[in-house]
Amino acid sequence: MYLISVLLFALSANLDNFTVAITFGMRKIKLNFFINFLIAVITGVGTFLSMSIGRVIGQFFSASVSNTLGSVILILIGVWFLKDFFKKPRENKECQTKEKVNLNTMLEDPETADLDRSGTIDAGESAILALALTINNFGMGVGASISGLNIGATTIFTFLISMVSITVGYRVGKSCIPKSLCRFVPLISGGIVIALGIFEMLI
View 1: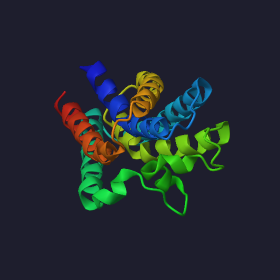
View 2 (view 1 turned 120 degrees about the horizontal axis):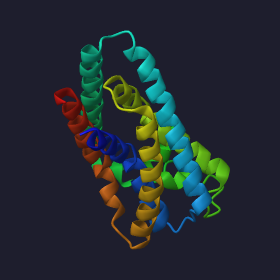
View 3 (view 1 turned 135 degrees about the horizontal axis):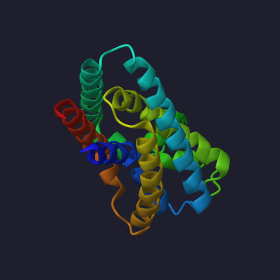
């Protein structure tokens, strides 16, 4: 039961990594092992920090209240992801190029992470991209920690699945999978986070 919760969190936290890698693969933007490792490390550190904050918050409540509070936070975040999917026009979900580049547009259009248009993601660009991915999952880490997920195990699984998801996503992208599937990420991620919240509330 404990392992299921950790896996659900890690899978949901890395869906964005997966679709970002698909985009890189489709655009033939080079993504080597070191860059993959760097993104996974930053994602793991972000998970650790957000869950550490959640642990501090959880100390102010009893175990049962913390579990319920954390579960409710996860469910609300999942609902927010679903709202994001149904609210935004589908055209904007297809990762079209934006003129202004910031952390939000990097997630919607991962190609903009290649700031110098070199066709390769370097260490600096990957760090910025990883920061965007980490911030996107920050609230989820806080809620998961409050609900009782182990920080160490969750951080390790998030790191490992990040490595796998980017590797697989890149290869999938190079196989010419339609990038329009990117728009379903908030829907899938929202469903997983809601399932995690409900699961944690019941155990």
